[in-house]
Amino acid sequence: MSHDLQFYIDGAWVDPVVPNNFNVIDPSTEDAFTQISLGTKADVDKAVAAAKRAFATFGFTEVEERLDILNRVIEVYKKRSKDLALAVSREMGAPRQMALDSQVGVGQAHLEKMAEVLKSFQFRHVKGSSLIVKEPIGVVGLITPWNWPLNQITCKVGPALAAGCTMVLKPSEIAPLDAIIFAEIIDEAGVPSGVFNLVNGDGPTVGQALASHPDVDMMSFTGSTRAGILVAKAAADTVKRVHQELGGKSANILFPDVDLERAVTKGVAGCFGNSGQSCNAPTRMFVPRDRHDEAAGYAKKAAEKFTVGPADAPATKLGPVVSQLQFDKIQGLIQSGIDEGATLVAGGPGRPAELNRGYFVRPTVFANVTHDMRIAKEEIFGPVLSIMPYDTVEQAIEQANDTVFGLASYIQAKDIEKARQAAARMRSGNVYINYPTWDAGLPFGGYKQSGNGREYAEYGLEDFLEIKGIAGYEAAE
Image 1 (tube, rainbow, N blue to C red):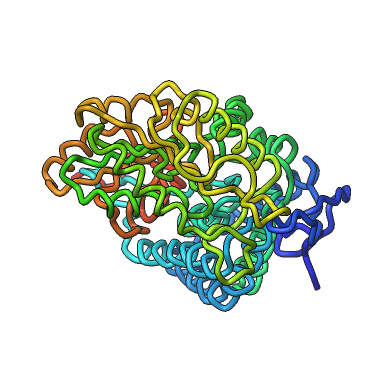
Image 2 (cartoon, helix red, strand yellow; image 1 turned 120 degrees about the vertical axis):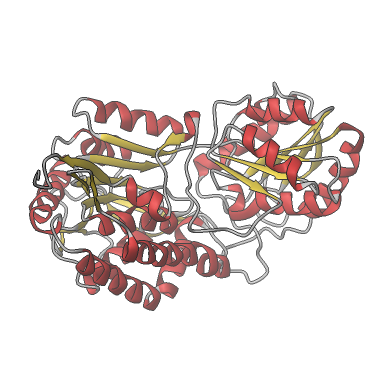
């Protein structure tokens, strides 16, 4: 039986209080392929009440019990990996193999890393005659996006379970099916009733109800900076903790000593991955001015190797972007780059010539981009790279930091000491030197308007915990 039109509340699949069917669109075809129901405040109230009841027990479980639950979730997750991949591919357009290897794969990695962390995490320690205890914060509201849906679900559900929190998840209504399957995984794994609850819906209704709910102790939100601000405002009246992972406009500084062709080629791939729909994508490439044209040539060559097409086509490297809204926004920003005088090196407005349906964006590279252009300032969230010439590394670092965002920075340099010195000066939550492999154990989160708090491994776990000091715990002699 399909659960697409239901919610998962208190360990059971239930119908919405008021049905409100909503089409889920396949971005490769622009056709609806299923429907979900959008929830209301009444559905949120039911889910929060279930979570609150469950916390009275689950919040006081032993670490070993929570570790056993996590391991059961991991086993069922692995069993359902192909179902998850197909759902992600259909709902947000990730190419099929990429959906399995990356979209589903990172979710598994996060759950496994959290289980590893939980085995040795110290929830209490004696300090003098006192005891310091780290306890679950309580009922948490989780709001996740459509671009890396399983990455964000597992980044939140994993540490919440490990901490002993109970939760209500609102996934993106644009890409909700993987979350429904995840709820089925939770159910099959035997997670106690009420610990995990799922309510589909939109931000202004379900998101608002969660963020403002007096019985929700914390909100963990991933999405746009605009929506993150609304969540924080809704949460303010009840003074709950708000953890936010928001937008980015990440700089990629190529030092004069690098192998330019390799650095540019990998930089293009990093920017275009997931069709450019990653908040930490290296979208601003800073190159030495005297090698700018050479860099632009390498970028053009790299961009033209990306095959754009439907998510189910074997040759596809770049699937569609997720929606008409995103497509239109990206097209407007590409046109702004042309209008403001940047040099169009590859791609440009419109779909690829061979595709007349679907939200497909041409892999686009601009050169001679200046710091004041919209494409240098605004998060595009599509396969669009801006190449920006610099005269000195000092100037590149200054311009890289001159943004409201601060999620990630990238540095390419043969001289590792110079790269380390530059990394220390970047105002971002993450710095990646010389395209390292992804690490589920590294903290992830932003400075400035890219958010607050950290996800991944023990850093994510810490954000779901309160600290209690118990004085006089040790008897005085």
